[in-house]
Image (tube, rainbow, N blue to C red; front, side, top):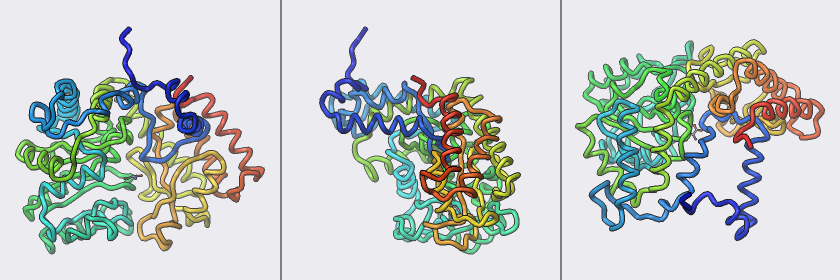
Length: 423
Ligand code: DSN
């Protein structure tokens, strides 16, 4: 057997027991509770092996065959494989697999299409958007003129008429669809039509749902959008990173914007891990997984709704639901704390038209990527709905609360039967 140096836990433990201890206790934390953060998942040992490899050592500024360093013959192969697999997986003309993260990928899209001061029309953060989509504190509104659209008050889904009205009024250079708390499918065709009407570039930030697209569980934005940016570690289940696919006509602009405009040396170990992930996503097992993620998410939302915790928009079409806690009189911050004490990890989240400040919030966001990776199904979603509801409404966030202890036992039973990273 060939020895390769990487993922060598014994060596790390010998040299640095402090950090080795953190690695183990984080694994214990993952295994010990329910992971319901909608943007997280558990990537495979194959992906983790590529991440923990000597490819991390290599400087490879540039692109395959056009590098600014010698010695790139092997990493070139990894990047070429990753590019080809991304193009095939998403049916895209062009792929750039170098972005370090979703935010880096998004910076590159701005760099490719916009000059400082130009206008972008995107979903505002409190309505379900993302920091990089024009939030006040982000470069995206400091350097660009960000106009925000929201959701319809009644349906709580994207207000397409408002998007059209704002597009005609502001004539944005770019129109962006996507966000971090959108439970419903996005009407890409409508967005494309609006973009065409005003001569805008149509960009989709598919970070949250690209894994569902890869698994053919929901429609793809790729045929409609000029450019699609995404992360690779959410439902997609790859390494923590980003990527961009686009139409051929934008390939040069995107590549130049990723490097040298926004980034320096690419992380070749992560690019290799992305290649592994794209191969995994092309399997029938992954496609089943993507569909199961949605079925679980819908069952969980139904279970919570039945107990009086209202999913905004009335439900979900995706891996996540956004839950309004006003009906049970608990803030998002308290709910997060109470669930955490009971071994349930999720996050507080603003709901549309939220009367609370963002760090308090009236809602929580729950997602099923991780629990589905662990093999949990519809029956387990009913148990999870029950434990979330009890943690939110019957506990006080202290570890010695009697109900908290009961819930912890139920959680332990679930994660023992459906272990994360089985031993
Ligand atoms: N932080 C991610 C999320 O939780 O949705 C978005 O970047």
